[in-house]
Amino acid sequence: MGRNKIISVFIFIIVLFSRCFHESTAGSNDPRGPAYAGSQACIKCHQPVFNSYIHDVHAKASSPVDTGSLKTITAVANTPFYFLDSSRITIEERNNTFLQTLSSPSHSEKFDIAFGAAKHAQTYGYWKHDKLYQLPLTWYATGNTWAGSPGFPASHARFNRMITSRCFECHASYIKKDFEQSGPLAVNEVLDRASIIYGIDCERCHGPALEHVRFQQDNPTVKTAKFITRITSLSRQQQLDLCAMCHSGNDRETQRSLFTFIPGDTLAHFYYPTFGTTAAEPDVHGQQFQMLRSSKCFAGSNLTCSTCHSTHATRQTTAAYVPKCLNCHPNTAHTAHTAATAQATAAHVGTTTAASTATCIDCHMPLVTSKTIILNNGAGSKTTPYLLRTHKIAIYK
Image (cartoon, rainbow, N blue to C red; front, side, top):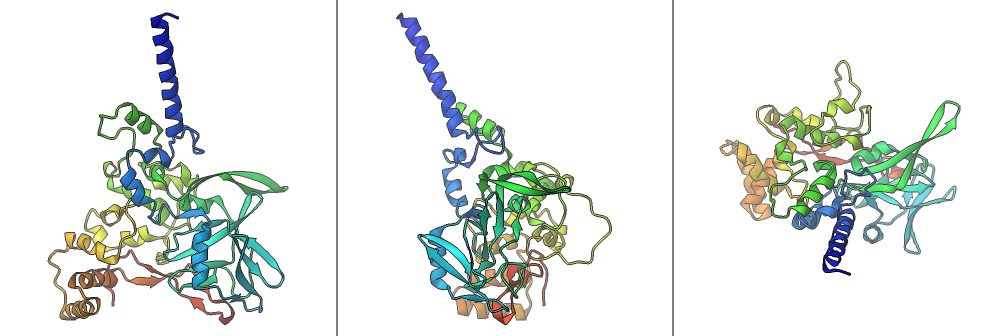
């Protein structure tokens, strides 16, 4: 074999391996389509950001059930949960698998999927063939207790509440759905569990990244990101639409799947229009955008969600948000009562900075009981308040 032919074969092998490298690292088999790379392709260039992001609540919006986490939870609270009909549910562990077991009539289903990061609460689903159902008990972190899942009755247990793809649109990055006929004029939704991309991943907020990954791999000296959406490049409304996609509630009917929303799209194009006005107050759970929009701070500034939040960072304490408030309110004059409250808090906490922070957030964005998420404590038929921080920035009594 001549020297030139050997060189040609060698070049061919390099090109072949280069293509294989592209395909393996760029995630061209992503279930969302050929334009997507998958979050694993982001790690090589964005390791510090990725390491922080995986601890954020967005990354944990949905996940396969973690047996270790359930062991920790059940170690804190594992008393039977009683319903008004005297039946009870217990959390059981069998062969390293956790189940919710109803006493009468006897019924057990295992924990398959977790929704939520367990910062406030975590609810669960179980698979039955190609359909997903919600388990009757939800872990309520604030009270370190189990409670009836939101919307479930206190009178008896339910195992037949279906979890649809619409739930995944805000708790995951993708799931493939199909339909099967269940009657002459009826269809049921079926889900492909193998297609799930858990949590809110990089491409959900930055758009399809395969072209970006390939370009940056081929041009490592180019430091300006190409073929990817930088949030700061979007208009204010585009940034708000991106967050409002999942933080404006689920009470509106969608025209098409939110999985097809790409950063820069107009969110109004994804919902059927609503006519008239409603007197209903936006709820603290899920409608953060509407509450923020009703704030004087929002109307009088260029405030966006990312002014205060970073989806790359781990969840911050209330103290960490105060400097952001002071960026716009450096010379706010507080009343003597407010100052006295701050000093009292400082004496308790042991630091003036912490007191200022707590006062700023807790007074102007207090914890409020949700009107739509209602948990019950079982046999006592008492509701358990579900508290979340309001995003309506205001002066409260």
